[in-house]
Image (cartoon, rainbow, N blue to C red; front, side, top):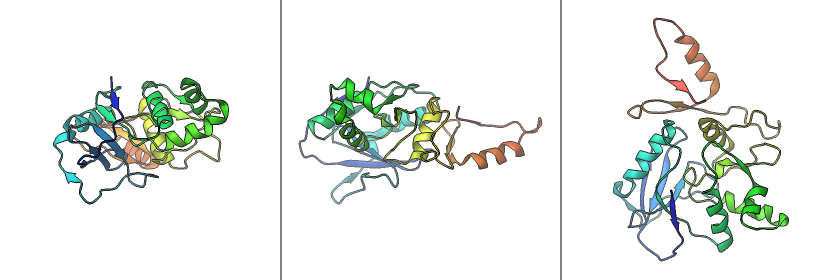
Length: 223
């Protein structure tokens, strides 16, 4: 089970970057190795390396191993210490995200109900989810609209589609106004290989080229 704390003491920030099928991930942690953020390129409100931060991959070994296993389809629950800093309301919303399991989705209204927020507070709940500093690790990508649409995602709808497809919960249909035109596909490969984020048309061309009995495919696309 992922553990969380919400202390706000100023400490040295450690950082590292690691490759993933959804782009280079920027991770930060405190001196004790507790993760404080995970950001992706182009993320709305995502973090960037600041002066005074210390580059050291040491505190992130477990996180890198578990992320690799997750993208390989071998891990369904992260077991990492997390620390979120925000208002009391946002921290309640983020804690509720931790209860949404792999292979399931929920709605903004359901998250509001879980924390005892009123119906008018659903918009504020959406704002808190959009400000989640720990993408992927704290699964805000599993929150969708009440009509089944993907709605927003700070990391981009294409990444949200890829993550839900990996977990087997991507919506079968989306309203035309919200459906990504080129949703990426996460190719699951051995941990020693490099996973890539590929558009579906490229997957199709590559699959057709190797669909010979003499040249079996070495990887399979996400479910």
